[in-house]
Structure formats: structure tokens, C-alpha cells
Length: 387
Image (cartoon, rainbow, N blue to C red; front, side):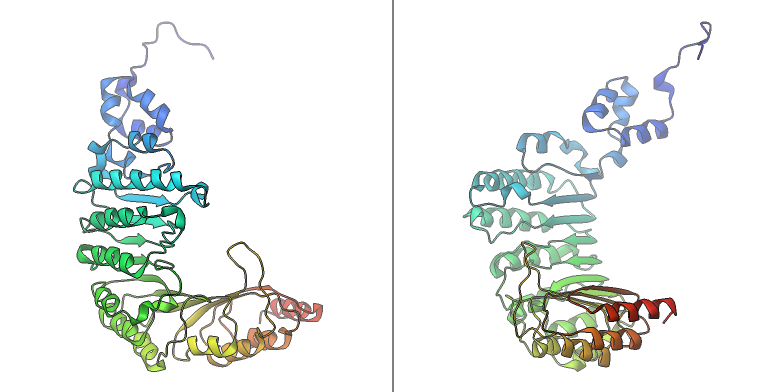
């Protein structure tokens, strides 16, 4: 391509601001900083709010964590996400936990009073691990102090925090104080450490009354009770559409819940869809006690995988009665079914085929277990016939 020697040179400072900001959004941190020194106008556009609303950081590098986000721009920050790094998940990684705790404490204290977030995601910090030692209390104190300053949160994920009831309720209280009425999506699955009967804590139910417009809720079954369902029916009537409940074998899951409580919640929230996930809870009586006929069950997942992706097999885990029970009571609502069970002694072919034929809304089926080839042929034939 030939260049006209008489053509006037392009003045980069005259480029429209929208184009410069769009180009900046595709650059990494270093290239963006280099581009910002091109001229004074580009330097000013480097602080455009759209470039600083969503940031991700490396928690393992304290210096980089602070350097990447100028605190003078914290006012523009709307979304913050931090996840416990894989490198710190070992007994010999205590120094990583110390660094992460110090980094989070310093950064949250500087953000407090400057940023009003819309989205906050603090996932898989696993405070129950011994690598935290006594630093978990300091981190909980910092998180609770920061949550107390937030009044515009709409999406909150505290999944995998594994906090003690005392620490968990402290953070939960701070979260609900100012943002309870605004939060639409709340994920507290594995928020409390295992083997805790959270449903028996009166303070937990009192705090839940502050969440008045929830649309999506993730939690463990050891948090569910008649009182909680009644509270949701009163405070989230018409707004709650998705409820995802995890039943873990180490969590208490033998509490008695009346079917009428689910009926009241379903009546108050006509669009409600309930998802149940059973992890190594396969005894028919246990599953039956959790899956009550009046709940609007749309998604069911049953698996025996451990956290290390190893299968656990127990001779008493017979799933065929559970499949028949689900087919009998949830044929009108069930849309997704996932079974990941390794048990050659249990023949699921006949009850599964009956369930597939009865559940007219079933659109997703995922099976990982021992099956006969004749069953697979029958399912393919039903699919071919559009049934």
C-alpha cells in the first residue's frame, strides 16, 4: 500500500473517545498503561468508568493485587470476584493463606466507603482447613466489616466458605443489614462447615427475614426447615423462581419438614422451580424424606462421586425405589434427571424407562451407571418417535 507524502499525518488525540475506550477494553494491563501515555487525552480516557467496573486479581501476589487497581477509581467498581487459589489447598501452604488473608483484609478495608458493589463473589475459601490456623477469624472480621458498608448488592455468592456457625452468622448478619432487601441472587451452598444443624439456629431464620426480594437461592438442606419455607413464602412471594438445594451425606438431613410448608411456598411463588442434588445420600427412606410431593421439583441430580472424583459404592444403595417414587409424584414437573451411580447390583432399566415415558416435561437425561443395551435401544426409539 502506497502512502501519499502530501497527506497530513493522523493525530491520534483526535480519535473519538468511544473508539479509544473500546480499544482499551481489549488490551491487557501493561498495554493499556503504555497506551495511556500517548497523549494527555488518552491518559484521561484511561480512567473511564467502563474500564474499571469489573476486575479480577491474582490473590497469590499481594503487590500485583494492589498495583492493578487504583483506589481512586474504586467508586466505579461494580463487580468484585475472588476465589481461593488451588495452590493454597495443602497442609504445607500456610504461607499462602497468610498472604491471602493479609491481601484481602487490606484491599477490603480500602474499598470500604469508596465502592458500592452490585455483584460480590467470594468462593471456595474453605475456612475450615487447618492451613488458615487463626487467620480465618481475621478474614471473617474483614469480610463482615466490608459487607456492613454495602447497600446495593444484587448478586452475592459465598459458596464454599465453610465457616463455623459463629463466623457464618456474623457475615450473614452484615450482608443482610443493608443489602437484604436488594439482593436477587444468593448462593450460600457450603457456606457453613459440614455436620452443622443450621436449621435449628433461631438467629439464622431471623436474619433470613431481611431478604425480601430473592429470585434465585442456593443453599444446603441442613439450612432448610418449615420456618425457613414459611419465611420465604412471606418475604419472597411472587419473586422466588429458582431454589437449588444440596443434600450432602455429612450434613444433618433428617429434620422433619411438612409437605404443607412446600405447598404454601409453591402457592406464594407460582413460578418456583426446585433443584435437588444428592451427594452420597441414596437410601430410599432418606431421599423420600427430602423429596416431598408438594414441592415443584424440576431438576434432580444423584451422584456418589467424592471430592476427588472417586466413586463410592455401598450395597444398601438401591436407587430403583427412588426412581419409582419420583415417577409417581413428580411426573408433571420433572424436566432434568442426572444419575451418576456405580452399582451393578441395582437394575434401573425398567423403572427408568417407565419414568421417561411418564414425565412429559423431561428434556434432559444424563445416566452414568450400569445399563442393558436393550434399555438404550428403547430410549433411542422413544426419542425417534418424539415421545
